[in-house]
Length: 95
Image 1 (cartoon, rainbow, N blue to C red):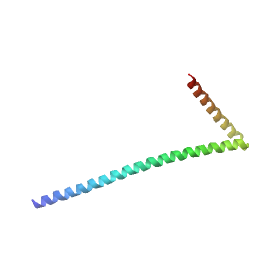
Image 2: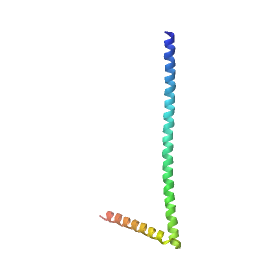
Image 3: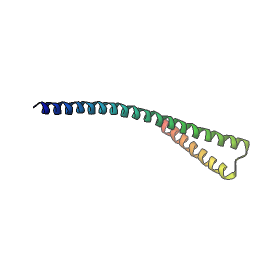
């Protein structure tokens, strides 16, 4: 009977240990998810900054006249798209 009680106690102790490990892992998982979210937001912000800087470089090249004709055509096309989008938004606001 005493042996059975010892086995039950060992099982109980191991179960408690597993539950503590689980709790620790859940906390770590939560922390890692939060860290991942922050890193993703940071990456998104940096990507936006890079895109803005690229656009500024294109604008500066266009101002200086150093832009090749193909790039200039692409820039003009993009600007025309922006202008059409702005006009569409203004029309929607006017309704």
